[in-house]
Length: 204
Ligand code: SF4
Image (cartoon, rainbow, N blue to C red; front, side, top):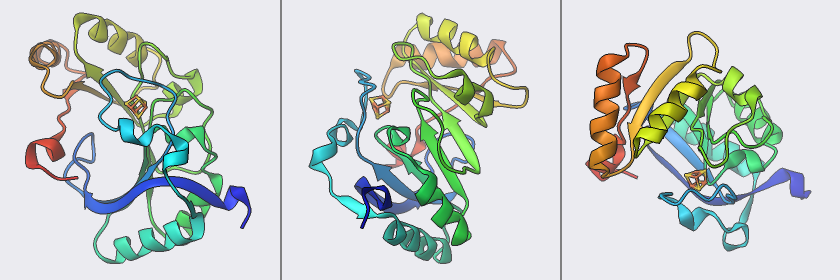
């Protein structure tokens, strides 16, 4: 099997999408390993080291996604880690062949690869995203801990296309982030509040 036919995988699971525009829908997740973005508040630091996670064949991953689809998953979410550290063309092509809709969650620091039905861009102030990702994402999700994050959120939103869903998501258990996000959304109708419902519910 060629290295291009495999990807490093932390885990796969069928659950509900817990956040963002598609929150609450049945979803199959493929969490890829590897991230060099280094957010201090990251809740998936276990996904960062590539060599801690086995490489799996993209064909087997697509078949697993197809089975989840038959069992109710509305779409497959490729997440991480930072999935775009890898070329996603092969995997997304196979997912499309199996008829599954594919969503991507990315920080946008790498070039886009693959064919996606929905792109959630979560930009980070210390590693701003590439312009191409800002202009093709369907959803912009900015994590809020402090007032600087609101300034950054507006700057990022100004570079997206009209119609992009704009979400402010308070950092997990950040009281200040919650207050700031709620207040900003209340005063600016183009934003909506995003919550990590899976964490509140104890879902994966
Ligand atoms: S980009 Fe995502 S996975 Fe990487 S450090 Fe930041 S929050 Fe964690």
